[in-house]
Image (tube, rainbow, N blue to C red; front, side, top):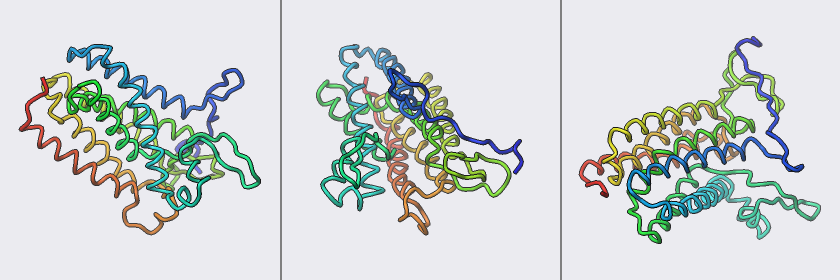
Length: 280
């Protein structure tokens, strides 16, 4: 193998230890992505004249919505046979634990989060937030969607640090060799592809926002975010390794099938935004 072309990927998953507790890159990147989105959306709310008191609860709503939605999405979309098989397995879906065959349990964290479920979860959370705090729904989701690609990119970097959601073999000398998986051949760094794409989507949507703030509240940014992210997600799946066994032999995998409705919804929202007046 040409060592110049191949990246030997073997990072320590632990960034540092705090009082003996490991702080993993994956968790850290989640925090980085959410904090970055927090400050961006806070600025957008300020631009719209919405008070900090109204804005502050939004972070908790979004955090719980994306975490619960992403977890349930993974369990129900990708591994329903396991998580619905027994009461113990069902609890593993809700709690960050794993029951051991010999008895007892261990803290394992939420191993398995699905972006499609997270998207549904955060939208439900935003709807609940808007009802309680009397914020216009499309206005709120438009502002959040301008910042969403930043969080998505950070999460994919976390996946890369974990050597998970890997790409298919490149069948050549270039690519990433995921040593932690016990491999000595290069694969497509699909996580890195996605992270770069989401950052580019953020740059594009942010530049559009700066010149077209009057579109906030029409659903345009919501639609653009859905269509752009999930269109790329649809095509990147062709170079990803299958995530679960039942996807073997499928012409389109679960990620692609779940992306199609979001792409359609995004295009519809952008078309509809042309006829809708801004929220303010």
